[in-house]
Image 1 (cartoon, rainbow, N blue to C red):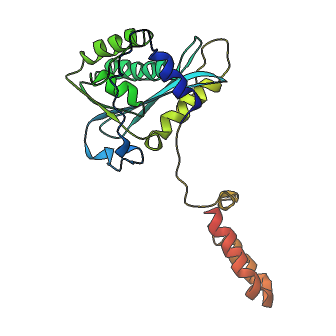
Image 2: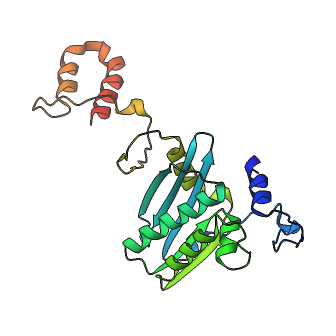
Length: 235
């Protein structure tokens, strides 16, 4: 648990002269619960969001995933005072606005903010004055979708947008900056297997081997495996 989480919770729920118990649900039986549900089982558009508020700054990130598994990441650095919960709302609003711009009608919203998910579903009260306008803005955005569902997921299932939000909080720049979309490659060989470059001389691949055999004598028995390996790597 982040050190600021408890402080934020107490600050957002002050105790006045007339004490009222908090309408908050913290089940003890789910303290050690790990969600093992496969979120890929439901087809359609999905939105992952997360916010990061730390000593280096405030950043938010969201990843919109299409039905064909195409990823649309977006990150923003916030240059105003922002608590952890405010950053979560900012990230969710950022992702929903991206989905609206792309014409998405049905979407599943996934995030590790238990507070945001329960508040937008009406299960928890929104007592913090800083979060009330955020909740109203988020509610208005949801009205523009034909179907929208919010679901809480553990932080371990939200690592991609968590990394994006942390990256945004660490970027220090005076103006807007554009970073080319990330392209993730898959390699099945070590990097040193691709260092041999092919030399185009107009001859077939076995030309050098053939010439070497003509003049190699008995040494060809030991040198041939090395030559064949070099030729194979160059192909």
